[in-house]
Length: 479
Ligand code: NAD
Image (cartoon, rainbow, N blue to C red; front, side):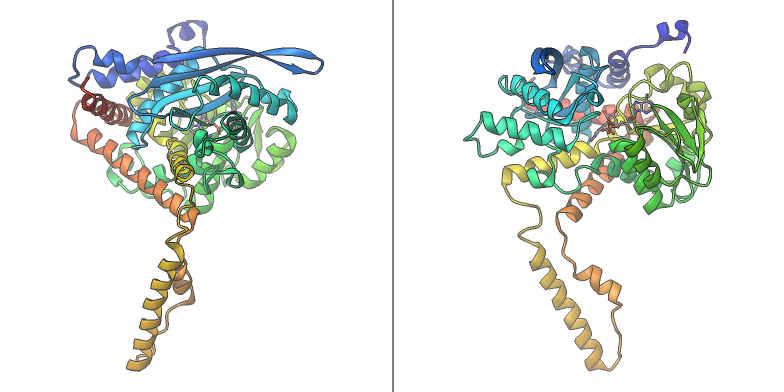
């Protein structure tokens, strides 16, 4: 991007505000309410020292609370050297609208620590995470009923387990202490299906989009996901799971994978599992033999494809490259990958964008299930599963008896019996709840998109649905 273009480009925070403004311009809000909803309620900055490698290192972290119209507030904690005040506030604002859109009963929050986790050993990261947790928890910025973090870029199950354990040490008599953070490993109070949840949600979102031929036609495509060419940026938690499920279960071809150190292209479809384990072993995609390697990774965002999935960081599609994007559909698995300026250019080009608010809401949705599980202290399905199986067994036995007694001689296929007789465990229930959430939210968005002439795209529709729900909640409180 040239310097001139960079000057015209709004930052992430401004982009979120611009998108918010576009939606509220179409609403009839009480004077002042618009401003109340838009601003972040509070952002806490903490600087703390940790004794490491024979000296003391100082770290800077943030926890921003955007809206407390519902509590607890919720949002991930990101570890990256680029984390800053504005970024955390933008991400917290997105969380408010996202939770409202998918009907997760939370306000919006987000946290971040300025650190490159790759520079530290595991035991050092644990020390740093525990200290950061202490600083946030003593101000109720981590708390089961006030503020519940989750993983984001640079953090995962491991960090969430440390956070939960640290909180528990500080609140030894709190029976609900496990609900202070989500995204924990299943053996430490987590839930099945949380790690895959955001990528799984991207898959469910695309499946739902492809159920509506008129929406698919708006993106100048036809047919199903099968055979669609997909380029993914970022093969981390979200990008890896989305790519893996779309290739293995929907027949899509992952024709491009973009990482920090370069990109891989193969029009026949890359082996996602093989690339993923290559990255785990070598720290990047370079050297991977079974595909064309492109050093200038950003150029591959412009590669010809049907669907582009930016799943890494914000602001990667901007005024400088939006006109050259060669995808029919962009699904924003990352938060804020398309700037407000790029959004205009892409709309004019006829590219359909499934917005971040909706597209990556799978994570918070399953986090919601985990939080409920922690508060209720029981695994989903534990009471019903065997009872459901025995009722199904009754039906199968009766069908087989009828067939035998009537002499018809029908037999149920073993595959049918297997699937019908198996009661739903936690993973099946989580996936079912996630699928339902993604479908319902898409339907709410597309209804607004199709019914209102003044709504130009799915992003404005998503903001409208989300903001209207926040407004309804404020109204119920008499504001
Ligand atoms: P992650 O750290 O697991 O993975 C990020 C991946 O992107 C890594 O493979 C990294 O190497 C790659 N990457 C980073 N910078 C890049 C660049 N400039 N070019 C190409 N690749 C780059 O993070 P994640 O949890 O998968 O999060 C990715 C995005 O999804 C973020 O925007 C995050 O806010 C969003 N998100 C994550 C979750 C979640 O549950 N983890 C939920 C909602 C939204």
